[in-house]
Image 1 (cartoon, helix red, strand yellow):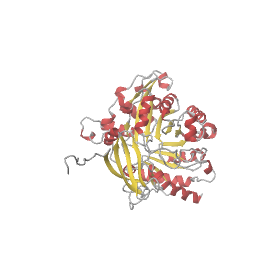
Image 2: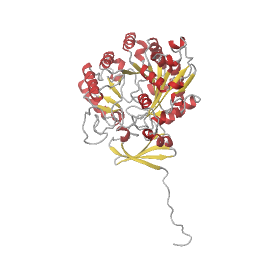
Image 3: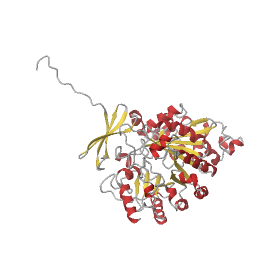
Image 4: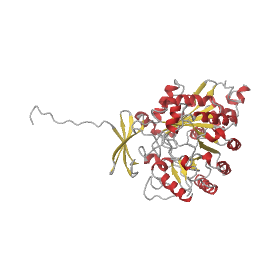
Length: 493
């Protein structure tokens, strides 16, 4: 080698290899290895299918936050009963199988496949074409599914009836009453609100049974509703439904699917609206994911939890900040962030600014720290859980107990009777106190691009299906379970 010839130099990779997991090929759905990489301040999944080649997708928009939140990982709780055996490995044995690491905090039952909308974004793949030809569960099927839920959980707390559009099912209210009779205290109806806006008999039944309403609410602009729901004027039905629910004293959580380039600029306005509306007790933001029907988009530019929360911080002028949110520990901490705030007139105070929530929910060290209250830990675990009863009197009482030493003075005379009587928050009855407590949540579901077996194994949100199995949400929508269950139900219809 001559003096002028330089020896080759080694070059560093442009990313940090964080871990190896298992995922799915977005095209053929086979289970394949996947790398989790920290690159350019973001978290990327990279994987290769032997048949279809390499794929990359953004899974979390803040690599530093991703690594810091790993401590919010609560030990899993076993269900009382598993429904399937472990044979082929996750995610092929769902039911739940004995390898699953968590019980079910929240269960969903899709009571039908028909809908009164044809949304361009629909993970259930429902629509108006299925209103007459799709499936509708029978009362006996729902009864059986709820019994299996009770067998697995003992005392399950939260059930959500979904679809399709569940308000189209003629026996929806019977299902709500059935779940309540079986001791499930928090029953939700997941709806687009159209029938509630116009059907007096349905509204009367909801007012009588008082389920909580999980209302699709993606934004106010015609373009938002046109692109996501196929109907630009849909906001009028949403607002009418909310006003009717408020008059009936039924509590609502707004649910917004957030798609980059469509409605991320509306997150602040949605929260501000919810804080003012008497029916609304919380907002749940869900970054759009690519399962069943979805908008075409680059998987490397999708919205993720930190993107939503930073948009909220900017649009609310710091009223709510990313640091006010804490991961939910019952699932994997990258899946779900939550905060609760006291609403006191024009003042909105996240309770994370009043008490040290992070220290109590840090499962890597909280058992070694002296002076932590076990009672406070139990309260915070109920609030930071997928089974949290948003808008309920019980949740409001938990918030009061957690922050009892730091309650603000109350001025919200327009929101509750106790304030009209000049009672301080510490003297409110739970039903009045609940009007001062507001939840903001963002949950990121996985699709075949971002699917991570590690997260699925600790999922605590499950679909109940007619044969008694309980299938994790992201596995049901990404790994072929939805297609097989739907085909089976359509054959019987």
